[in-house]
Length: 110
Image (cartoon, rainbow, N blue to C red; front, side):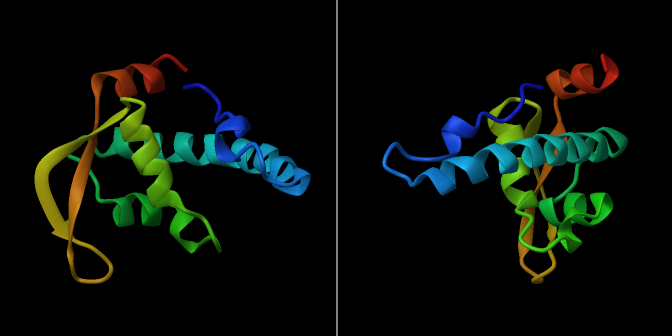
């Protein structure tokens, strides 16, 4: 898994403080994505974002956008949407994502 690129987290006209923060956040998001990928690996039938956040403990961290990391993992090909849904923390149906072969290989090659 490639580390999150802080350059993708800011705009060209953002202040220097935003660019400095992006470097710190990029390190954190890479670790969060790894924790989430491990949770999906341990649950091959899939998880909702809420379930993944709860299993990793990321849901209890203030201002942690674990659901965004799940979307990024999907965009990068490590997770995929399934045809299933389950109730989330709000009671509304949430999509279930599952780990892909690429995600399995990433975990097993570490």
